[in-house]
Image (cartoon, rainbow, N blue to C red; front, side, top):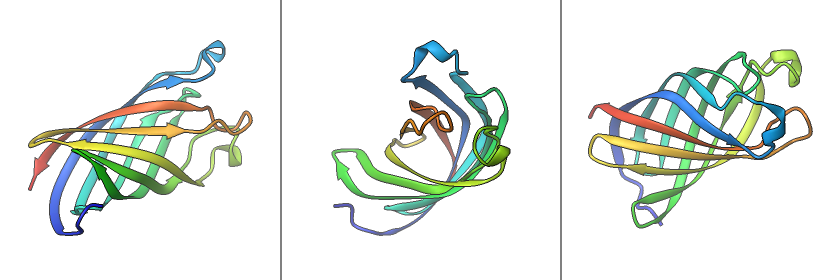
Amino acid sequence: MVQPETKSQLWINPGMASYHFDQSKNYNSGNWGAGLEYRFNTVASVTAGRFYNSDRAYSNYAGIYYQPIAIGPIKIGAVFGGFNGYPATNNGGWFAAALPALSWEGEWVGANVFIIPTIGDRVHGAISLQLKLKVWE
């Protein structure tokens, strides 16, 4: 278990790269954009941003990470929040999501890995990698 302690770090990211489970659908795997993550605790951070999604439309997101478990330097938990911009889900409107998330944070660089489940033809299952850079501590 990770011991909760106050932190104050700002990370930026350029979106993410995704590997979709269904390769036959020609989904966009370069989900590039811009995002921020503010780590206010060793087990929690808030995030927001915008990216070009798997359906080739722009999405916005906002959420909170909760990662109370660690195996070595890898934090394990989930990110809870909301997304928009997916045409088959709420006609592109906002929807809630909870995604399993793994994080590694070095001195200045880090990475988040998300596991996105397939939900019918509304959510396209994938594993996504998001690289990040610490810009303030």
